[in-house]
Length: 117
Image 1 (cartoon, rainbow, N blue to C red):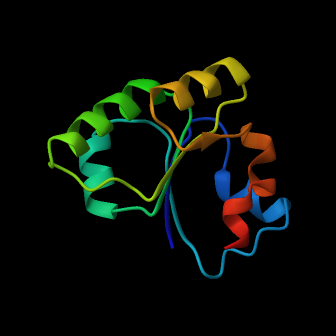
Image 2 (cartoon, rainbow, N blue to C red; image 1 turned 135 degrees about the vertical axis):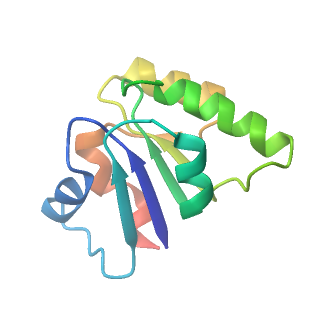
């Protein structure tokens, strides 16, 4: 499985490994900003997309909205799962309301059921 993370403050791989996630069957790529997010998503074609809400220059919520518009226009394939991973529960709720499949606090990410598949 391919995981693409947009997170600007914390190393997602480190959070997952320290949380006990075995990443041997996962290909994880993290970007520390959302520059060229469309091309990055299109080139990597993730199965799982992790979006931080408060990431520059384009907030994760806006990345999600634009991505879903491109999916609706058949310009890009939608990742199987999109998760909001903000530290703010309100930001995660906004991501879910906008169309994310779910959300979780980034420091709880290793506890998400997706890693058990």
